[in-house]
Image 1 (cartoon, helix red, strand yellow):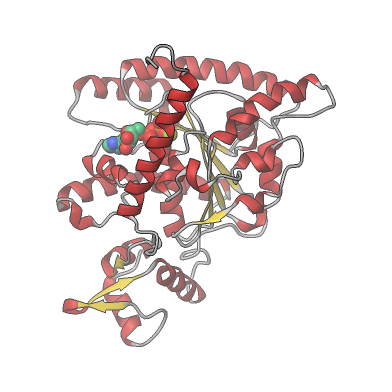
Image 2: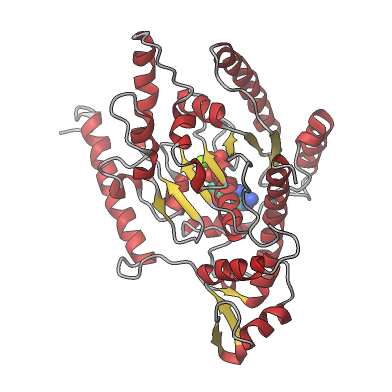
Length: 392
Ligand SMILES: Nc1ncnc2c1ncn2[C@@H]1O[C@H](COP(=O)(O)OP(=O)(O)O)[C@@H](O)[C@H]1O
Ligand SMILES: [Mg+2]
């Protein structure tokens, strides 16, 4: 049969099948199934930085047999697993002068922080930002839930899920927000290989919510679409300090429901003319739609909104002009620090990893350090906003 007369659904279906098989093979090669994906160990220097203490102090603790015992490798270098880091936090917090120094999460009365990462431009860095933020907050000792709201499921892929293969019987947020027979959110939450970080993966099922909602609204039985995500989160509220939601590149019912659940909004912007123009459309549309949701009784309150500049190249003149323009327009709403464009970030992405997971030896030291410092600075500013929302 010629290509033109064959059915497009069959052809595309065949391509999808072949691609999925190859992707599975690729994953099996990178992360053999018997060697379950695990997080690398961290050097004592990295751990000292994470905890804000001196490496010498960590050495003394381990010599005195206090806290977890690190693995000692050639040359006496000490390495800590993510569980060890958490154990160190617990140990240090017990003797901390200021409570919350080592375990910075919620105290009684602090409300769950729900940070939604949005923009309808694909490639603006939403998933990269959300993944690095969620992982860094987890390493910092916050209890974090990451939610993949994008049917394209890139955030899930970064955490080792191949959506069309691993989630055959559902298992996405859709199961917990659907109008008929929703399951408790806890049923679709999965542990990751990061201590303190759980994830609700995504896949194409999420699209169903966009199809179901108009029908549910037409029934006029008082169903509200914009409370679905917030209500689902309510059921696991006490288990987490921060929720990070990676939104799809569109302003559908999913994104609006996430925005309704949000206590904070992070808009990713690549500083180029077309991207900023597209963002302008996005902001206009968001404002209009959320206005309508607000009038219908949706919760539109939030603690903060920030723009984060992504894939920034400081040597690029036009990009600098765009950044200055954004800062002059939006002032303090633009984060001071920027996510620099780096091959360390894009190369890590090729093996479905973040900067916090990759073996540093893959990169020249300067390349890695520059990239990780830039993302740590962005994430640090966001952690400060979280603390501020809790009145600290
Ligand atoms: N700071 C960065 N430096 C280099 N590449 C980046 C950076 N941020 C994102 N990328 C790359 O750009 C692409 C799009 O980023 P992504 O986070 O997936 O955007 P979105 O989720 O908005 O579609 C990905 O291939 C990612 O690896
Ligand atoms: Mg994405």
